[in-house]
Length: 99
Image (tube, rainbow, N blue to C red; front, side, top):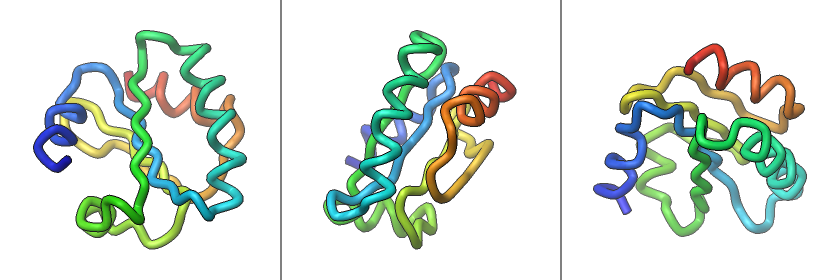
């Protein structure tokens, strides 16, 4: 996972990484919001979901202590981070400001 993850975040296109867990209620609320973000932004964003229970080393590397936690990467660099659920318009605004 680690090498493919690094390839994914090296993209010119902003990559939104959603660290989640199956047992997490707010994570389930965030999933349809992220689908709407993808529907609105299309090719201008990549969204990757990372299950923290199955990818603990990756979650640890990025200091993910609670879920959901979203990280936005551009060209391999983390440009934004937020824990918790956000409305679609806020996520879209963050992605556009980092495009």
